[in-house]
Length: 147
Image (cartoon, rainbow, N blue to C red; front, side, top):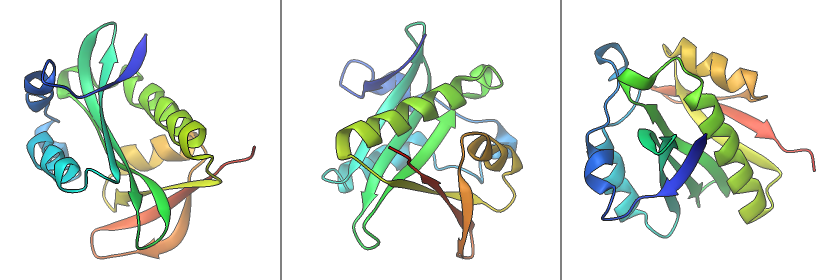
């Protein structure tokens, strides 16, 4: 069973040990950097540890981007030893449910590195579509919520 759990003093150190494969390091920030962002943006960032059968397998951070008035899936990473088991997709579904149920959203946004084909395919499989917006690092995708 996959679950999203709050990051606390009890699981903080385990979260810090998470890492992606070397080939993916350019696609996602380290957990140390991301947790620092979560603290700096603590009023609008929602970080969670991803558990599978009570083992931490990844990390996801959701957030509210005030400048654009958008809720986002800000970061997602599955530890290299737990990849390709469906945990990322299950965690994303839980994150989408959390955002929709907590904030009654009509849309969720995220950014994807241009070279990250696996992430793009994952997001497409859940209904995300490219918006046409991009910067020098990534392109934007959007999931329209049909209530």
